[in-house]
Structure formats: C-alpha cells, structure tokens
Length: 289
Image (tube, rainbow, N blue to C red):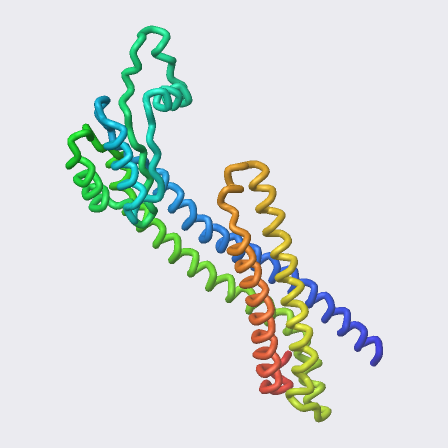
C-alpha cells in the first residue's frame, strides 16, 4: 500500500511540475500579447505626434510678429510643441538628411524661415489640421502651411487596424485562459482516485479541497513568476537587438502587466482546481476509470 501511495505521490508531483511549465508558457504568450497592446498604443501616439506641421514665414517678418506667432503656437491646447527654425537651423537639418551643403555653390541661403509644430496625438486628424492651416494663413507674414496629407489621411486606417488587433488580442487572451484551465484540469486528472478515496473514508469537501487549493495557488504563483522572468529576459534581449525599443518602455505599465499575469496565474489555477475537485467528488467511482 505504501508503494502505491509513493507511486501516486510521484505521479502527482510530475503532474504539478508539468502544470507549472504549461501555465508558464501560456502566461508568456499572454504577456507577449499584453506587451504588444501596451506598445501599440504608445507607438501609435509616437507616430502621430511626429507628424510635422510647418508654418513658413516671410523673410521680412519682424521679431515682434515672430514672437506673437510663437506665443500663439505655445498657447493652443492641441499643440504639443513648437520650434522656430531660422535659415541656419534649416540648413543644418537639410544636411542632416544626407543632402549636400548648397552653400558651397551659392552665397545665399534659399531655405525659408519656419515654425515646426507637432500636435498632440488625439488632434492629428484632417479636420483639426485644416483649422490650424486656416488659423495661421490669416496672418500676412505667413506664406504657407504644409503637412503630409497622405500620412494624416491614413491615420484612420491605423485606428481601424488597431481595433482589429485589439479584437484579435482579446480572442487570443480568451484562448489562453481556456488553455490554462485545461492544463490544470489535466494535472488534476491524476489525482481523481485520491480525491474519491478521501471522500469514501469520510473526509469533507473542504478538507479534501483545502490542500489542493493551497497547492494550486502556490503553483500558479510560481508559474506566473517564471512567465514574468521570461518576459523580462525577452524584453531585454529585444531591446539589445533593437535599441529604439527602449524608448517605448514604461515601468508602471510593465509592472501592471506583471501583476495581471500573477493574478491570472493564481486565480485561474485556484478556480480550475476547485472545479476539478468538485467534479470528481460528484462522479461515481466506476466513472473515474
């Protein structure tokens, strides 16, 4: 009898280890989806706020008029930043883009004076940009207002793509939860005879479920901790390969994602274990085979 008990204990230990590994892998997938969701929003905002709106000025503009325009640009609620660019700044920007220094061939800097504006992400829409264009064009010392109209026109497509990705992420998250549930139930399958035997000798449901629920909570926490560690290693590896990803890192959001993985790992393990225990307690002995 003791050998049978030891064999059952070994099978139980193996099933718990496999359960932890399975839940960890599934939580890594969920963590990856969560990281993608967080960074998609930030990346979308980054691209929107990088759309340049250039207000070109006449060369005869006075310092007073220029200051008036800068104050206007800084006070408007939908403008994130505004910077004045004189001819020399424009020339340096031209050269930074890989173009030749035209001052080697001519003595006059032909690049215009301008104010470069970046809008807040929620205002990068065609209607708002048309209003901004009309607002600046009413000043006689403004010659033109330009922005990439094709890029702005495609922003609505980006929002639709984001909604599709969000729906796909929610569907995958649901599938992940189902996979975790099935993994726990398969692990509990090896304990079905133990559960039934304890019931037959008079143990109460609470007495039978309590140690298994405690074990489920511990295993869920271990699985979540492993998943969080793997996600962190993958994130650091990705940032090492693509350094630009460091600009997207948000410590608070990542901690919230880690907390979500921990809560999911523990809660799903607990409820799946509890449901399995109740299921096997209600089954007849012959049905367990």
